[in-house]
Length: 239
Image (cartoon, rainbow, N blue to C red):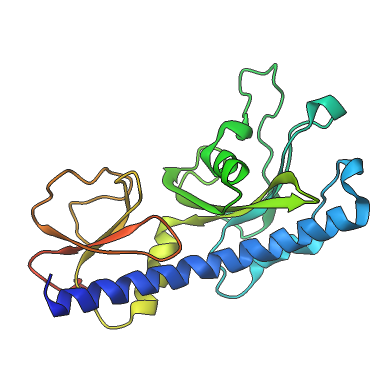
């Protein structure tokens, strides 16, 4: 890869990383609110309740997230069921609403979030995680990225806090951050799935085919298991 491509890949990767960290800053604020609740009420209460003001983070100027909250690890032996406190911005009116999936194990529509990647990976690894893009069937119906981090108190896994970000909004903020037109690029996750793309025939959510000849492997992205691929011909992003 020539010097210009190296510089372009580094600039795009750094911008992606900054946008990701901006979302994780919001997740960290939710995380701190959850830990504060545990500190007040104690683990034995089985309660980690977010203050009502936490949801107002969704109204912060320039907020990328359209959903955020706390998802609690159930403790069946102690009679503590599945529970989540998750708020979303209504895409039509802008009002805040509570996400209420079916958490009844006996129901046909039962949503066992403990089996999801965004919950299970932080539980197993003790590290933050990014999932997506995927179509949100429980809320907005848009392509989303979900960013989560584990909540651990007194050595015990309490659950995860996280945020949902639409891919379209992520892309808009990224391109604004990049400013002048970069080379056309494709951002790919660790499964080889396209997170976002400025190369028209590589669509969000699709798998990047092996040996995509028109792309050059660019650079990894700090903080997430993603890579930037550049258009081989070095053409700029079309405005």
